[in-house]
Image (cartoon, rainbow, N blue to C red; front, side):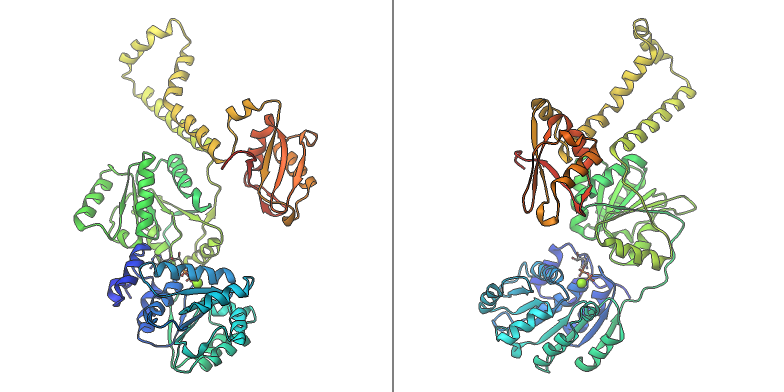
Length: 533
Ligand code: ADP
Ligand code: MG
């Protein structure tokens, strides 16, 4: 089944505009199947893995169903945890960007209940909450279920695992029978089916099955990165591997445009391709890509379907794809016609779990690698350059240049001349390295020079609450950066941060040594305390 376009779903113009604004190019498989049923008012059970877009699958039809003229509660979304409740309500807010008069409120434990009661009194049509807190409000009669037309159990399997079954049943019993009931889950244990037998009416079962997928022989590698390091990671890998043609995949059109601009800003020959481009523009981009005027094509999954280029060296999954099938399609763009190809995937935080699913279903191994450091990149550039030099020497035809060198050769060693030339040519890379190192994590030379002989106060991003004590700081600092424990000055421990006095001379080693390190399990970030940031 082809994925639907959101335009084909008969959505209101406000929601459609929001979906476009969110950069969604087409519905994901679960959305394609679930949204039409929910819009028709049917009960459904939807099953698909994490990250496949289940929130919008119920969010879009739920918001379409709300009557904005009534201030009464109309939909209840139950989520297993407070984090998920917040996430879902953020997605709802985005969907409501162009809609007026629909109010959505997340309610979960840990937030003062009085505040929630005040917000509820203002009239909220949709609540997104954890079962426990929703029950609390029901008991207090601050939530009245009589007017509710739709209930969604999001991540139902997880809610059951967390022991919410009884609460869920109590809530469902309090909601009028003529409601629409929707259940989404990544897995379908027996208990879920029992729930659905008891509380859903003639439900439609929508399952995105995980097909057996095979991937061609491609070197598959992933890198664990932070979201804000992705661009740096991408450019390092491109610089390191020097691909002639590469394809960078993002999940939305918006991202594609953003990344393309950023790459262009850094001097790469990159262009975007996505569904908003007219056919003529697309053809133009593609022909530039084929003849090598563009080296990097940034694309959405949809747009990439039309791409027919054989010799792509590297496919980057800048965003982890929403579906295993997408992954296979994406990486299948390289390694064609017997060539060797590489697929590099960026993975943020818990996305690693989805990557494991991809490995399982494609029956292939994606190997973790560390991102090349700036000096690796420089080394590889230098190697490439020297290889080039060798080739040119072998080729000969250097008379003209030998004559130019002659005039210098009287005065200087040939090796020095060669080194100076190399410095001119590769100098750019060195400057770039310094710049990045300073603004990323290290106080610059000027700052250190200014404070030479003095102590500088360093701010550490965690403190007493994380169980960190002075001796942990001394241990970590001396262990990771070689600064002698006796050289560390006063250490002041506060609840959420720590200030430590460090001789300026040791700052560079300290910042370098502590980068990405943990103390008592907490990832440590250092900054100069009185520096305004
Ligand atoms: P799930 O609930 O299945 O784990 P989410 O609903 O949290 O997945 O969606 C995962 C991510 O995918 C979110 O960032 C969401 O904004 C994005 N997303 C959802 N639908 C689409 C779509 N049609 N196109 C692109 N991105 C989408
Ligand atoms: Mg979800």
